[in-house]
Every structure is written in structure tokens, then in C-alpha cells.
Image (cartoon, rainbow, N blue to C red):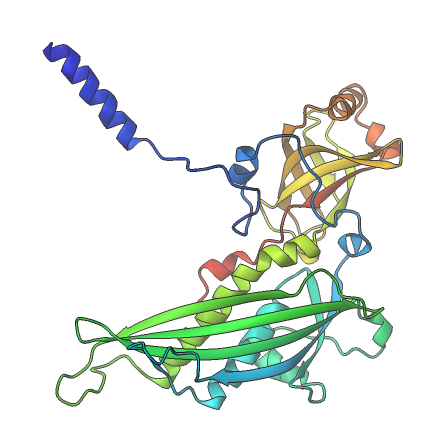
Length: 351
């Protein structure tokens, strides 16, 4: 009897120690897509959105950004709430705009040709070069521009007194992007996200002033964190609308799962970008073949297939490649990114 009880207890302990997998979610549901996300998805492999549109095959998309609206909000606090709106200075709003511009410029998928702010004339390139060490091209010919991004930014904040007598300051940045092409047609749906950053400060019970830590510099840092949070949340939408589609340039003779493609970091790819391998069956019908992982180089990359589809087409392609890897040279294969990864240093960036 004792032995039975020990076995039962050990089994229960082991079950408690195992890592919960949680419910299976759609690939890319929460942003950056991992290999684990892909393997957890069920059913046949599907082609990413916009896998074969013109913009997906463009080396680098030239984008002109115009800030149509910049505003501070002091009226979002519920009058019945203990929270009160923060008085944020106008210069913090301008700093948030510049930081958002710089953040957009860091996305390798796009080349920011020029910046307009609040409908004003083109901002000086040096303004962003000084802030973000990013070079912006002068759009001397308007037909060079692939996309036009109209942006709005709403900055707000509130102060809430906590039970321990300290104050919690919450900064909120809402960004909204509407994108059009050269024909003035909207590209996808508007992208809108809100980023949040919080700070907590102890107060002097006599004077009510903060004991330390609070400063305009710290407030500016919190606002930048909120901008970054909003941009991270916006990345899945950017990834759906502007994936990177590469051509397979070669297949390893020793392993058909290893391939070379003609796109890299300069086109928006990063290491561990998940991709879908596909081809046009009969030269006409696009068919998803496999999931692959990228090892991104500067202008070209290698991909490693880790899961082939179970379809007849996928088995046919595997057989052809196994017999003759050069088959791909006369039967074009492509790889399209699943989502658009944001720069890896965003996870550790100090605003």
C-alpha cells in the first residue's frame, strides 16, 4: 500500500513539474513567429498573406512618412476614477514623434525617403540623423516612392495613488498608420495600436512631493518605452501586409532541406525568420510546400526546411530534388516570410 501511494504521489509531482503547453493558437497571433508556433499549428501548410504581390518581391520598399496629427490628451481619465490626467509638456510630444520616426527607420523592410511632420514641409534629414544615426534619402523623384504612410500619434498619461501611498504614473501612446500606394489606393487596413509604460514613485507624506527618481528625463524615457511597445504590437500587421518573398537560388546536393535564397537583412529578414517554401504547380497554381527557418545574411540567406507538407505536390517536389537538386533551376521555388520580425535589439533597447 505504501509503495502504491509513493508511486501515485510521484506521478502527481511529475505532472505538476511539466511545462504547460497551453491552447494551440494561430501562427503569428501574438506577433513575432517562432518555430514552436509553426509546429504547434495544425492542418496543411498555408501560404502567407500577400505572398505573391508586387511589394513582397521588391528589394526594399521606399516609404514616405507624413505625420498628419500630433496631439496630447488630458481628457481620457474617468471623472469618477481616483486617477488624474498628467500634465505632459509639448516638447515631450515632439520627442515622441522623432523617436517614432527613428524607430520606423530601423525597419530594414523599408527605406524611409523623407519625413513630413504635421503637414509641414519636409523635415531636415539631419534631425533624424542626429537622433537615430539613420540616413534618409532625399526623394528627388516622386515616382521612386513605393508607399505613403500617413501617421497620427496621441500621447496621454494618468496618475493613480496606490494603497502604499506611492503614485503610479501611466503613459500611453496610440499610433495609427494608413498606407497608400502610388495609385493612391489603400494598402491593407489601417494599423492602430496603443503602447503603455508605467512608473512608480514614492511620495513624502508631508510635502506630497516625490522622494526621488522623477524627472523630465525619466518621463521622456517612459514615453519612448510606450512608443516602442506600440511599434512591437504593430509588427504583425506590417508583416501581413509586407512580407519578404525570395527566390531559391540553389539547393544543397548533400541535403535537399538546405537552400540558398536571394534576400537578407537588407530586405527585412532576420535570423530565425520563419518562412513558407512554395512553387507554382504547372507554372500557374501557387502551392505551399514546407516550413523553413532563415539564417539571414546581408543580401542573401540560407534556409533550412524543417517540416514538409503531406500534400501530393510537396512529395513530388521532394522526389525531384532528391533525384536532381538542379531541378529547382528550371522549376522556380520561392520562400515567403511569415510575419516581419522587428530588430532584435528592440528587446534590450534602452530608450
